[in-house]
Length: 281
Image (tube, rainbow, N blue to C red; front, side, top):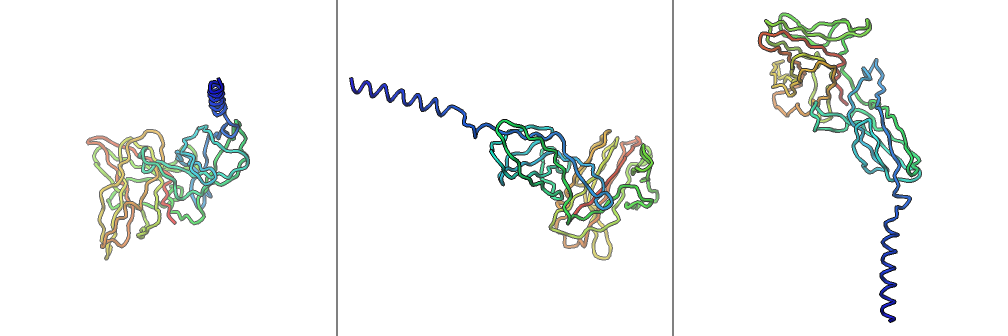
């Protein structure tokens, strides 16, 4: 009889332990982070436009990665009390949706929040360029353009947008012209640090972006375009990693960037460009 009572007591104790362990602890009740929009604050006279295409926010809690989130978003975080957080601006690399990375030229946002179980913390991240970032900018607002063409006819022109204080770069290719190419007016030195090109565009035909080797004696060699930008009848923005294209070449002294516009056979084409930046450290 004694053994039977001990057995019943043991079973009852195990059931109580299981039931107790299944009850949620207060510390396991999450706080929710809500991010509806993301902004960029730029000094337009030095850093160009604040328009951006930030696709994700990389969220860290107390130095540990929580996840990558695409606004608008709401996600749970297990934390309690005042805890430091950090957020990084994520981009779609070279327009390829499967390739996402932290944009190296935006400063991370660091803060400390008071986490309370089951409450919602709303955040609107405002990212800024790092102070050591350097810019080459063509926003087509100045009379002289920073692209030059080797062709006898330059099909790149400056036009007014819907407002007088906003201008665009415009390329019109008639059906008799198959292709047209322009080059930046700067030479980019070899570097191991990040170099990116930001470009906004609207186009009814595809165009290519590539690099040109500049060799000793001023000789040039165009490399195959590393990005083919598909036609898009809505304004879009790309972030292109240029440093990956600057392969070690014993003949190269420096590089510049070209844009190759092409129309379909026997068809005219229209390309609109704005807010082109080359950003480096």
